[in-house]
Length: 146
Image (cartoon, rainbow, N blue to C red; front, top):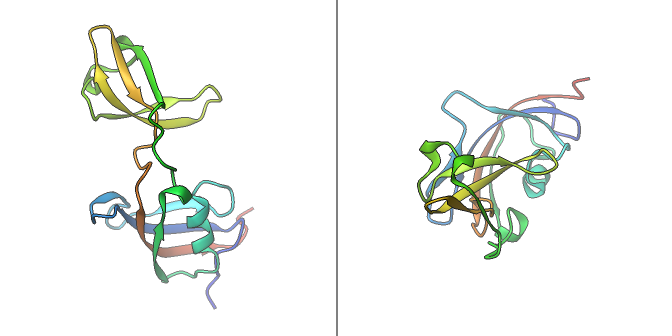
């Protein structure tokens, strides 16, 4: 019998993530997968909950509302930074870049406006406000990989 996903399992999945219009937002490359330890809060809670109990070879469709994913966009979540803080290739509206939070965590931000001396960043996650549609496939599960 195949191992089912439980907390502390080492899990390998492949996925395709689409928005409400069917546009692919993210996907594992063909023949590639994503590996994580289940229950360590590396995934959206709704995604972890949906994967629990699944076994290798199983597939699932999952829809996650904005409130259960990256939230609704906050119109006040903006920051103005010196233009020199970004690499030249990122100086275009709509460009997604990574930034470090004060606690060291990485966050995704979007260039909203480029001015003479500064750049306005939208601090909302790029998927904020989107209903997310996942197609998930469990590739491999190892129980408690310690």
